[in-house]
Image (cartoon, rainbow, N blue to C red; front, top):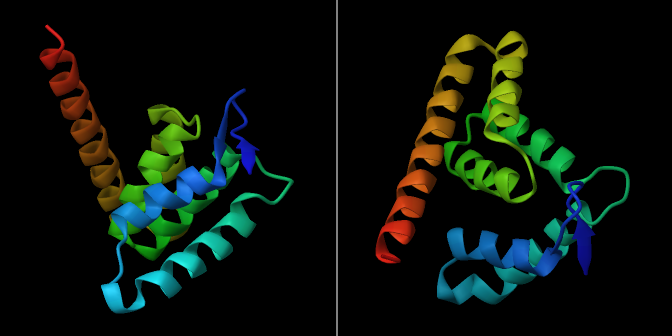
Length: 132
């Protein structure tokens, strides 16, 4: 199933779930059940009408920031970029959360966003550098 990303593109729910599962692996003994649960639950939420994928990414980034879930925040900052958010928008979401969830939480979340952006830039530079 393809879902509009709100920016004129579409990405399948299955692609998003596969990316998530690759970054959040379960032990072999429970892997099949875990994968089914993630695919079913995540697909249903992300495929619902009413919000674009970019808007859902904004909500998820703000929730993970407030919960101080650093691992999932990193995953969803990358997903937000893939769903059409800009770095500025991600920064604004985190800055906005400072008013409601506190500055220490926002400082750490902004640091995580910076680290994710640096990692992506570094990976992109390596790809560009290998093409010469």
